[in-house]
Length: 277
Image 1 (cartoon, rainbow, N blue to C red):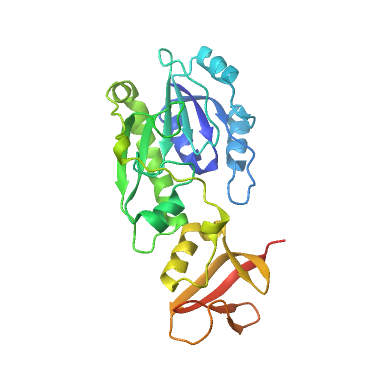
Image 2: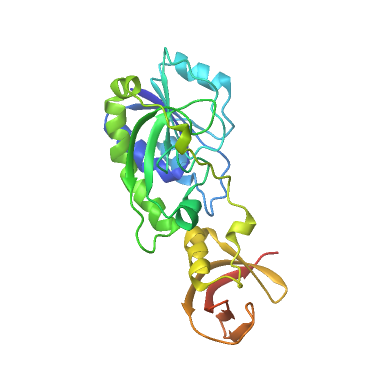
């Protein structure tokens, strides 16, 4: 089947798996990445090597019409931040790969919320594209129970590792799955907006458990901290419970590379951090 992929490097293993299965990519549509936390360098190199166009401009109806006319049987999105224009379902299918058990945890970046707030399983959902984000009928989904100390990197890795097999199976049976897709239960729906700076903040007035959870939710993407009257991005720390009489936010220890800060019920040792200018 001919297909168009919308996304970035996170799902390139899946693209390669579909090609190995015999499917033909007509184009890879991405977006301007910072190539620090989200990347499309691999996608661009793969496209150049395999003579598949990589388009960084935002998708337009003309793109959809062009590739529908070229015989695209499927438009596949995974982590694409823009709304994809309507697809003529008489000629092609539009499906989205979402990292949660829809209809729960709709939104562009649900993983930090799954770790910090839901206390439930994560999962994978493949659903029909609609003009309302994450609301299309469900073709396939599976549960990914959270590990005790799940973080954004481990959960993202688990999802990416399952994606090639899941999408290979869906593409193989796409006509039947499309016909038998189940509507989402709106009564169970939840939505989370993109995380803001408040959600990323290591609040020294909170408990070690709460601060640790924030750190795991953002990992190498960076949580935020405030000390020495400056703002900092924090990429690695260790936290522990310990009784003390210090005011939360007090710097308990300065070392050559580490700083220890008091919290409501313990301490946080910042190991990798940098000032935000």
